[in-house]
Image 1 (cartoon, one colour):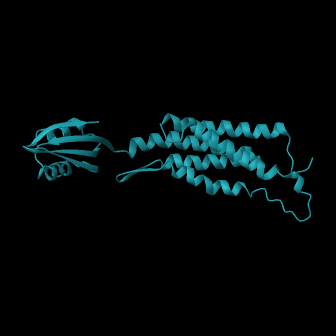
Image 2 (image 1 turned 135 degrees about the vertical axis):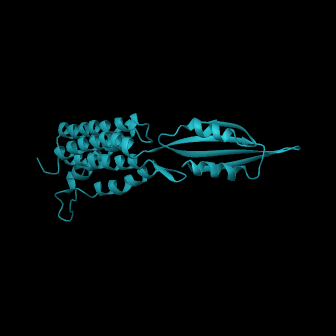
Image 3 (image 1 turned 45 degrees about the vertical axis):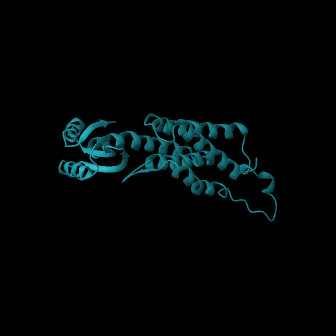
Length: 229
């Protein structure tokens, strides 16, 4: 058999391995409610493996042509750059924080695993999958314990005073070490008075109860109501 040809059962085995390895990483992302989950990772890994197979074995009839040079990496190379568009769609920016980078990176590495399966690099593909899963599971636990020292809450404040209240709330939060991530104001003008609705995404230091922050804001002058999500 020509080196540019591959038995159907051997090809099916490579695709099946890509499905399993991509599914393992996708299952972990699905458990964490990521933008790209179980099915997305399977499709990316399986598609990458198919493109690798197509690139390497899809044109055997042209291999013997004198003016044709076969390049098994010609289509596979486009996967590496093309997967960036899919990964970018999982990255979201909320105020000063950015989420989705881990999922974008997992999609990129899943594409590489799929290419490895399609090329027959079984050991490298399986070892990389194990290392990725270890990174996502173990390092996630380490990150939650040592690095995520703050929690985020969405707090809505209703006040009958439109001037000076926001500055007073900001001063109070700054003294308590609370960071305002996002801020939205909505003013409701009526004939007798004007109401101000303040929506804030707050990052509260670890060890501080959100109830304490809400209660102090509620006791401020002119504040008529506070709700938290």
